[in-house]
Length: 87
Image 1 (cartoon, one colour):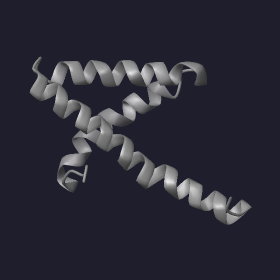
Image 2 (cartoon, helix red, strand yellow; image 1 turned 90 degrees about the vertical axis):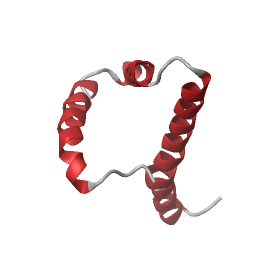
Image 3 (cartoon, one colour; image 1 turned 120 degrees about the vertical axis):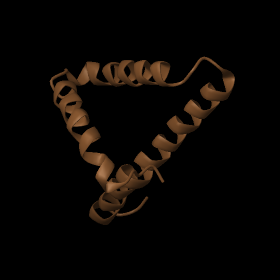
Image 4 (cartoon, one colour; image 1 turned 30 degrees about the horizontal axis):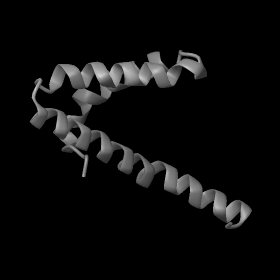
């Protein structure tokens, strides 16, 4: 699970909200590149230059992908199936 304790969230939420507000000002065509740049910069700064750490970073990215699909995309798909019928 990617969750952190409730008491740890406010510190991060305020920073994340500022970042979200700035990203939303970008054009739809540049949001993907902006997110890639931001996430890459963070990962490069946080993970030391060793294969062990790079391997962990790739695992984190994979878990982020799966969690986003599970918590956001799958719910959206289920709503659309209910709305439009299954394939």
